[in-house]
Amino acid sequence: MQIVKKNILHKAGLLLAALLILIISENSMSQTGNDFEISKNLDVFSDLYKEIELNYVDDINPGEFLLSGIKSMLKELDPYTVFIPESQIEDYKFMTTGKYGGIGAMIHRKDDYIVISQPYQGFPVDKAGLKAGDKILEINGQSTIGRSIPDINLILKGQSGSNIRFLIERYGETEPFEKSLNREVVKIDNIPYYGMLKDNVAYIKLTGFTMNAGNEFKEAFEELREKNEVKGIICDLRGNGGGLLHEAVNISNIFVGKGKLIVSTKGKLRDKNNSYKTTMKAVDTNIPLIVLVDKSSASASEIVAGAMQDLDRGIVLGQRSFGKGLVQNVLPLSYNNQVKVTVAKYYIPSGRCIQAVDYSHKDEDGHFGNIPDSLITAFKTENGRVVYDGGGVEPDVVITPVKYSNIVRNLLSQFMIFDYATKYAYEHDSIPGPKEFEINDQIFNDFKTFLKERKFKYTTDSEYALERLKNYCTKESYFDDIKDDYETLSNRLRNKKNDDFDKYSNLIKSLLKEEIIIRYYYNKGRIIASLASDPEILKAIEVINDKEMYDSILAGTYESVE
Image 1 (cartoon, rainbow, N blue to C red):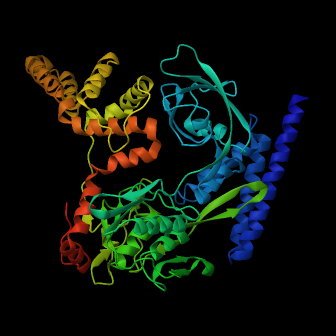
Image 2 (image 1 turned 30 degrees about the vertical axis):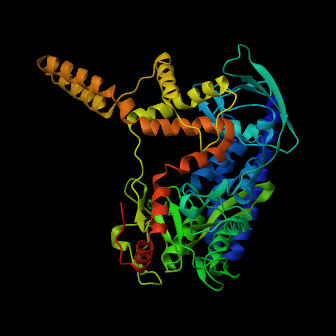
Image 3 (image 1 turned 120 degrees about the vertical axis):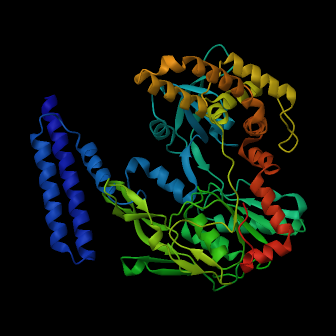
């Protein structure tokens, strides 16, 4: 009976899959002139699917089997063309609206368990009294041991109002405890913080381009102008992976007048060829503007940064951006599934496309490569400055990013800074505000003691190299001849490594400060605390205050600064 039931389910799954293929086939053939080739290939695919399902020695899950085929097929394209099953619709909604049904927290995996990294202020986890550092042992009675972050996220997200139960282990408490809460619609702000910096410079941090981002940015800017004498503004797009194209146009419209071309798109289908111009009167076309970008600034962020650069409206500062010059549309499929498809490339005002990877060609190893230098083309801004396509937005003022040493990377990857912040928050009910709190000698020495108790260890690049030398010499039977020299050098490196903690103390203190502040003032507090010592913020303020430098950069007579 069980076997018959399984076969019926398989047949039903096969029928649904065939129906899906038929619908896709009809839609495709109505839009292209390649009807026979499409029909032939879909017939082959359908026959293959049927024969495997009927004849393969073991039972096959029809849904999983088809999904694996879809994923493999889409891998031949770019990473932004993806299948969105019904179970992941919440993720799609989040991409466009910044909203999702869930618990309102960031999580990470440590060892075998899931840990709350950061509750979002005012949402279910926060309101239930759960804290950063709390270990989630069970969800709805099911253990989290060995579960991946994507698996856990699928469980945590769900319909607003639905209940979810946790078994929590907390630092300082001897026994786990249960906590029940209801999911809510969680909204991630496009602008987690805006305010005034020194020298009357305004600052707006933009982390997303979901619906209404343009209006939110405009309102923040207008509020800062009304309450302060603003001499310049910093638009921080670092780490911003993009979002809705029209919101990038709306934000650009704040600084450039009506009728300016911001971005155009070109695709295979005629209706994908569009030009997007500003439609409203600008808020301010003269105020000095700095746009901060880094290697994680992508898509809509690059439209804003690239447009301000091409129109010579503002200065781009930081590191070369990601280089995503592709446009995606989400299209409906049968049974509440969807597919996000790359439908066009976009071009910023100078005419350049900043797409860095060529997904239309693969190398001999089957990998996609960057646009070759031979195909990089020069374009010009409105003032005649030379800019280039094919590799993101190159800043007008380049700032070399802080490079983490091995000790810092290991403090982060082993969660030493995170775990100490958990301990500190347990022992201290409150701290001064984000602008006032500092890591003093007492806290720093306590952190050192904490590391000793946790037996923190790490390996330097020099130690790795020395160990490789030992292995090579051992294989070639040379090691006995250099053993004494090896031990001497190893001891010297070990002694030198002991100085690393003090050598990198300023960076360690900064990271420790931000992690502790998150426990009391959430992500907004962390941003505020980071501004005073952020090298890119400080450089941006310097450029705004130096009118001659600012003007010469836009005129193309000033060389990039590192």
